[in-house]
Length: 276
Image: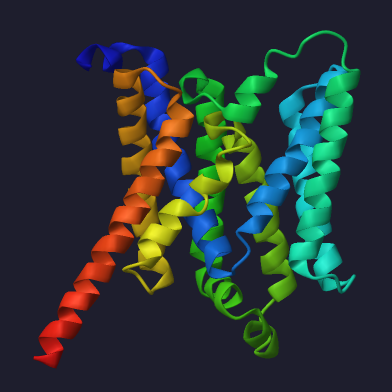
């Protein structure tokens, strides 16, 4: 086990997990608090359209996926605010269109697309130094935005209508956070894959929500849960020799279930002690 830490690719994987845990904690706490977790699934699957188009045209698939992600996230925001379409309905439309476009262009692409599996299922062990710099730069920009507009972000996340009434720039905050979510999804695709990314943006936050009520504490707790589960799943995958991305999500799910059971039992014990 100790030999693994001597390999560069394993060190990159650990650093990448640490950086993306911080970014996903900030993004995930916002979308969980705002009750729009499904947008991560919609944008994630819309990225598949960008990947398919990139492979078909011979362009960088990550770049085209990023364009699709930002366009789809802004499309959801535009449809729900100006088009008066329910947000979940807009996400469903973007989800379906993105998957359909991706399947079409992958089918039309000559030959086999071997890199597609890395985007669908992810492989944290393939993170490069360029990926780390991209993760770090995005996380720094995201942290700066949170530091400058923290109170406004929290207000929009908890009660968008109230924030609008008191004169906060709800549209600007929502648009920027939606774009940030799209960029985070694109940068994380190779980490856990399209199929598993939603869990990275929801399970740690749901676990933290069991014992945290303040936005800041929930964000910090979800970052800690995400990092511990990610590193634990990576090390466990190295021992049992299974795909690390799937195991990371299973570890997160197990931690959530155990924490929920622990909180439930603690409440029952407290209620019985009060009755006596």
